[in-house]
Image 1 (cartoon, rainbow, N blue to C red):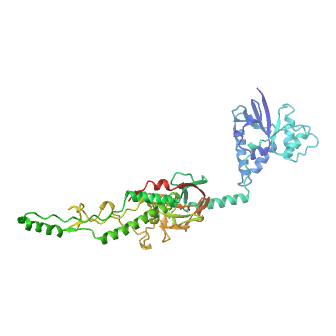
Image 2: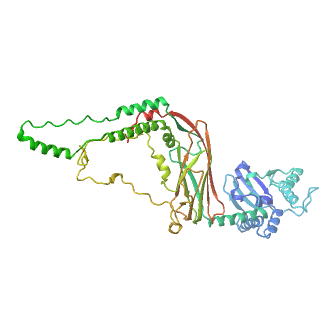
Image 3: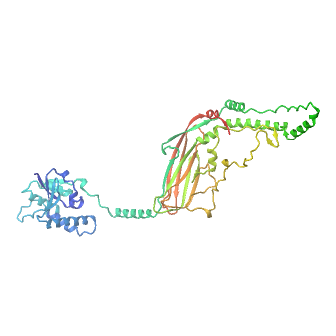
Length: 487
């Protein structure tokens, strides 16, 4: 069994981890290590244990407790680690009074007192050596051919905080305590079309206007399917009876028929012709301007900003400010209702205006072949649209836990803001819908979206920033126009 004796310096007990935590196997490849505590180390530990409440004094008191365990043991030793290697600690034997002290040693110094103890022990055991991180002790040991084991860096404790460090820790603790009394808002930006935020370049369709030739061809196609009606031929006069006895009955029948018959007048057909000409012009304008509604819908980029407050306090007088820079504009809402945007999203893509109805013969004030049913209702309940709820309520009637838009306009704008009297902690997340409006241009378009959240009881505002770059995929509106249909 290979055994070695090690005299640890005081700094091993004060500046390293506890002896039972140290990886002794990494330091020495032996079966057993005997740690001997020399008299200079015992004296210094005894002196430092009364040195206040700093870390050095605390470690000295811990070492003194270990010394007490050695004294109370039956064999004057304590096993620090069972191993391998097995690490045992005890006090070094007392030096003989009649001994020869090497010349040059200054026994007034604790380091050189320890060197003398090791030298005396090496007379009977040549494995004895010093374990230290003290440069002065290492130099003295080299002068007297005493082997030295340097303390590995990973054995040492981190440097003790000085007064400045302790002050910083104290201030950080105060800041943490203050933050615990504040709301803790969290902002998240996502896209509602599945595109990852921060992915960089985005490509959007760009529809080009139809040429004059394409517009004319499409208009003629619509006219062929819905041609202009012409005035009917005059109604032939009914043939009279051939027998005199039927003359009176025939006259009575004709009087009743003409009394209930109303043929279209030339004036009605003139008015119809003018309406039809206007309709042809509107169809032509529709095809000519078709690219506009297509671009208005295809170049909207929907985003969702989610605001949560997982902290322990509600946010008072919360203000959410949105701003975009660059050549884009945006719609914004604290809900999904944006009247102006809904008009854009519902623009007809391939619906051609309906042609006017030609004048028809009327009977008893009703269209022939289209008499009203007895069960017909004045209102079409399936298409009835109720007016929307007023968006901007009086402050006296506002819910203090709901976000309201500050501006009177829904957009498109370059900035918008929302307020809430109290955004409660732990409540359901608040979502803000944002639709970026990207102008129809071939050149790349860049934009920057920022969101800032502040509150009266929030020491620092929360900010979110996102850059966007848009390029265009040029497409023709002809494919949509060729699939035209009537309203």
